[in-house]
Image (cartoon, rainbow, N blue to C red; front, side):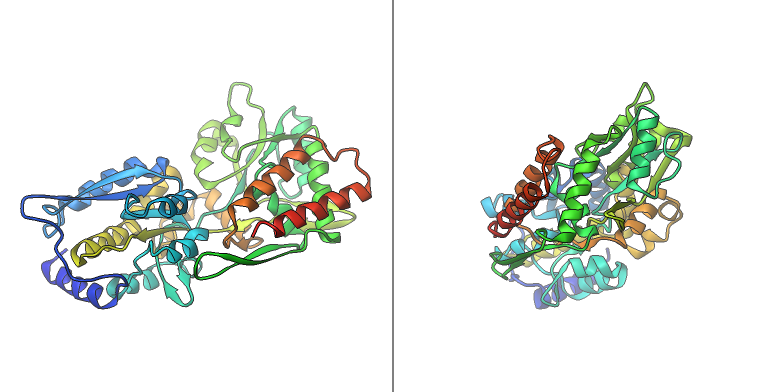
Length: 414
């Protein structure tokens, strides 16, 4: 980057970035370490690419070093709530954590050319995910936080219905793997039938209200479908990252519902029999529904700093990490689907059948908003009970009571 551009960026940051004041980055002869968090699967490529990038930054390479560490995108807010000072300077996180990060002053909002680049370079959904109360607080990183179905084309020839997939897997002595004991996944049944569960979160990151209509006729249809699936001989429980069940040496999977980063494993194992598709429909009480789920994004945040040099440098890192080059590099390393418009138009992305299936699935999904941590543990326990057969012999009154208790417990979680 040329000196003139750096100076312009600096003046823009001082004027437009929140939580910024003039200061010194360090004393002569010393370097300041900038810590970056990303997932384990992208840690190596991120460190490698940042090393290359920094070596070309004549204005900054003698002032800073960059260290990349692994941190799950769903764990970032917990780390910041525990100790902001010891948390990373630049970090990848799941969109549903944005409000709580804002509430503890953990994100420095981009302004000037940084904001212009975000608005011009990314798809609308990812920009909205980075926005609260009309203000952009983070850099879009992916448009892929969701799940799809991988399948063995020699086993499953029709991916349109859940019942058909289960039957085809059973007939071949295989299994349809689904993470029924995971709230992120088992919500796909409830959302499919038209029910929902929402929590209202204040600007202070406090959950103030909740609404849920699972205890309803539509909710019962979702509940019954999950029970029916759990009893089918073609079903098996998975963790959500189980493409390895397609193992060529007597693998047990005919189909697996999982995340985009499992595409490489599924493709490597299945070869010419590799298939990817959106989730299927299911039918209950004579009515068909398309399986739903969450639609989400990963974002990159910058922690506020007291000196403007460090703030500018961290935003330059975030700008690079969220750009076309790095989004394609993360795709190559771990299958991440880009939010960057130019990256989305590359041949390698446009030809990826898993990302195509995910985008088709997103048409049936709802945006992932914020949920209290208790929501996930409650939904997990509910799915575990179904998977364990707790309701296999239950009558309608028992099922209704269980569903009402599930809803009450979710409402009380706020």
